[in-house]
Image 1 (cartoon, rainbow, N blue to C red):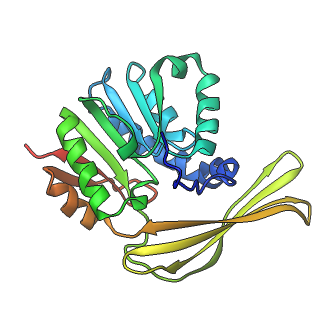
Image 2: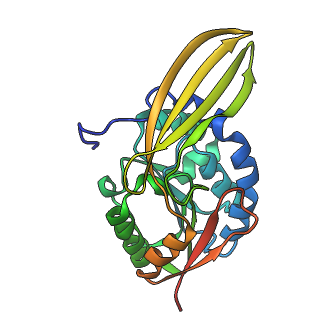
Length: 247
């Protein structure tokens, strides 16, 4: 179960997640699906930080016989995730939703692959160390890890910028964000969400997120200590890589 101290950063903003990430996933799905062709097609695929389920759908389409474990701590995000699963008889048979953070769920002893997209920066260095060790112990010989990082390798001031602007029915959904260093490797991001009817703002709120900033070089070093070798994915929209167990 989730601890009482867990504060859901997506409690209000989950409805905007697909608005914000739609274009990213249109461009991410090809490279991810291609890399998944290397793994056991009937194995178990772990989606860490599944959100509303865009990556679950990519995995399911790429590997029609695989079973999928979708780990997601946010109750608001899981509501959308389960809604997506319920609309597909295929997903209902193959996707299991695990509610909690990685240290709150039980992973199976063997995995064919793990996908970590838009998530790794929520973990600090000790948590990432534990993650790489867990995956190294569970991945089969053909297993891979697909991971991406933010474009910023170190904290810096990011001026207010528009991140999404999408029409849904008679309303327009806007997302803007700005960021500031928050000490150490942390960035403090503030996202501004608005729903507009024409020029009128009919709903507005903000949400804060803290994110550990680092590049693929640090992922390579940390995962390397657990026995992984990193290969960058050059066609990815944002910095991404595949990790393979060292032979």
